[in-house]
Length: 550
Image (cartoon, rainbow, N blue to C red; front, side, top):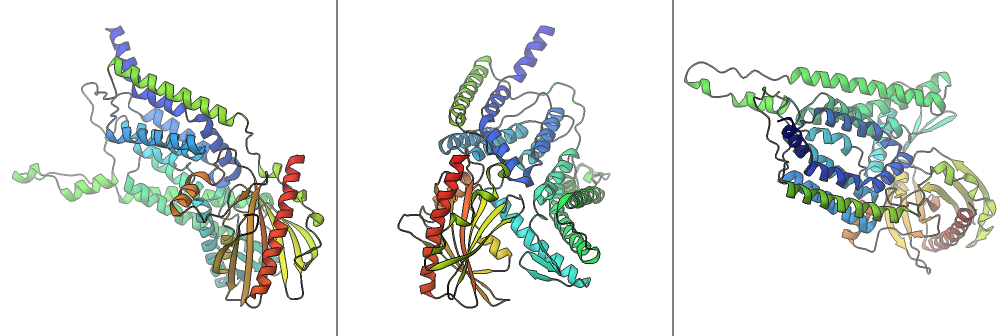
């Protein structure tokens, strides 16, 4: 009898479980590339090791050892994973491998029941879901939006409290100091970290879907409160005490204090929601109506409570069990897929080096004043400087800036780096108070297009003119998304752009920017286009030469 029980337990473990484990293992090389790039280039996702560890621990400790039900939905999710993997193999996209791995993890959660509860473990998939970067640079767009809202709310609060300042876009200017609200909404104290803490509370306390949605929505509000508090605290400390909290260790301490307060607010909101959504006893009345349940009470308890399971009198049926022949088919098939994918990924990644942090591969002295000629397109170089910003991945770390002047124009030519994907740089100007009035693409004789944008700052009655182009360290030009059609653009933005690509290479952004009091006439536009085309070619030559020497 003991031998039979052991054989039964072994057969209960194999089958779909081994197939899923082998399939998950087949994702590892590209998924490792995805997470390495996420750690190095997206600091607001650096919570992912804790999310992965929490999921593994909760899933392994709460999963019922038998009783998995591999119905149509989890099987469809596994097939979706295989589709993502096949597409990821074709276009070499670590993001697709990571998303496919999430689908298989979700399938296992849907097929598994929680020990002692009338529910599946689907809710635990929220933790790995948060580690999947939003496609089409959605995370950066959310950060940019939150920066704008934070700046506006903080400025109003400071005005209400009597702190005189001037706001221009995302810049708060005080006497003797300008604060750019850029890091207050990113990094490890970002909205995404708050959402992770909320997801951890939901999974730890076994909250329902309705409770979880309300708690995550509260987390968005608390993240806004946290960021506004940081900005206001920095401004007040400077205005009243001449203490600069915008840089250094004191800035980090302030950020972690605000993060801790936001976490406590989340815990408080969770307790409050638990208090007002306690399950209501469904007491049956005596008489002929006693056999009917109150539908309102049943609906309330379904939405807001998790019911425990009564003690089972016998072992649960494990629908994941298969006959030995079917088990062998599942395991052999999954093993072949695993070996094939591992060999392919090893072949693709064998000659590639991991992306190094921006500080190691990008320096302010990559260019100098003589990188660009003294005279270009009838405009003379006046002065040169190097600007160093933050290490946040939504902005460039270094900006090498040359100023060119003519009789009626002054142009700012800059090369910003490092980036790791195509940048919609116009969003940065919108955050600084500019309104885009016209956007087009300018073709050059060498086939390298540039984006041309006209802008206007209505409040200051200024007109802006911008030309920008991008190229990577190898000299390859990065073209704007324009000619492949809407479907191809969406496909490329979702799956191929961004630092999640295998072998993602650092890129440079060449800009030509002019501010005038009136709209620039067409003859000056042609002069600026020629200035941009010539300077970007010189910058590309200098960047590739620097990369080759390193």
